[in-house]
Length: 116
Length: 107
Image 1 (cartoon, rainbow over the protein chains, first blue to last red):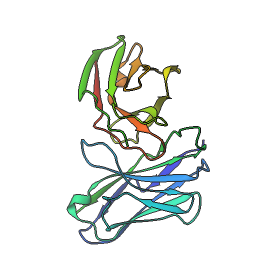
Image 2 (image 1 turned 30 degrees about the vertical axis):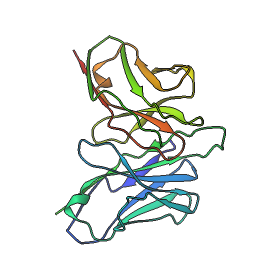
Image 3 (image 1 turned 60 degrees about the vertical axis):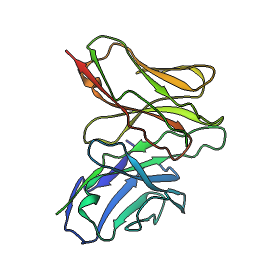
């Protein structure tokens, strides 16, 4: 089945130690998103890729970076994780169907990041 | 991006119909209204999307009045497994999640 896959599902890192979360998709969607969701809060969009074009949300900290080497894969890099970065990180994809349509987002299961 | 307002929580009993209303007073002409469901420790899942009037699929109905300043998600005959957070989103493409509605279905 076509899907959005996130690895690992659980990640533990140390304070200040760089960490990379990965996302892959078999949907061949041209748009990929990264969200951060803290406990009991709604998902918060960090950035998204429209094909290779990177779009950063204005309030996303510089500590968060992303790479999309090809259509299928997207990575979230946290350069120096702090305790406040502990959260669920969600990857999503959508297909841009043009100006006349909206587009459903397909979410992965998320990676829960713990910072010790 | 249009801001949405939903009730923080709702309780219902199995077998009842549940209606969750979302307010989005500053919806733009091109915005769609989309509802997602999220279970604990899972990613949100698309439920239904509409632009105007009524949309129905196998799991829910979405009612949108003519002015589009609100919408109502209707879940027929809920079961315990429908206990989740339901998010109403307005826009196209990148979406801003509001606080969502925690629906608890009781036996």
